[in-house]
Image (cartoon, rainbow, N blue to C red; front, top):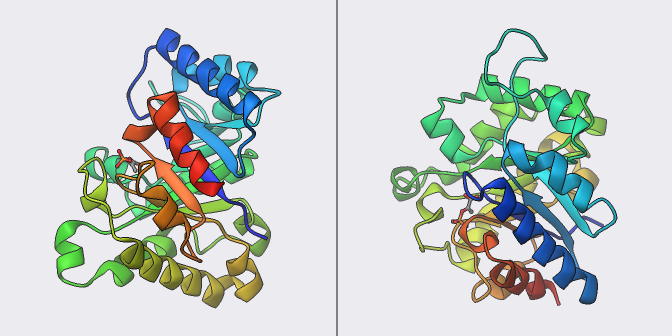
Length: 252
Ligand code: PEP
């Protein structure tokens, strides 16, 4: 059975001290009330080692939000997949629309990042999703399929086991506009069908597909009740422990 997941994406928020305080609060809350899903927090690079150590024996896993598309060497300012892994982090978020848009991450670059992440023993949360113009032109399925084909559908069936997909319509990220549960379910089912075409029905059934885009405690239960929505990738609402816990509770 595929995993149910609630993953936070802190983006470029929280100093080290603030991040440690948030992770501590979350760890304490979830120690008292065990979650019914896997919980992941995607922190900035500078938090990874400290927070991975802190959360070592807890139910919360740690993710990076990026890694380099080169293995090592003279790439000033970059952080490799091996370095991320060495902090104790288990996951890396790749393909986020903000990185595609602001840092010109192409499907080819993302493919290199995905390969390096997997080679170094990280699991990948791979983000896909359409812009508002693409949704209005009814191109969401073509966009999602192309993003999968461009960066992850070359993987072997064995490698695929370490991929989580996050469907994040760009028009819903940080805008307060959520896809309706029916809209989200429709495209999640399509994504699962695409996975089945490449890896077979069983692998598709075992693939976790998360929804992201203004997900909060008030709309998470309706979204997560859909058969092809296996949890959420959460931006804004992951920055306060009670808000994030409210979404985790949608699995209760
Ligand atoms: C995200 O950036 O991954 C995201 C889903 O953001 P938000 O929840 O703030 O819309």
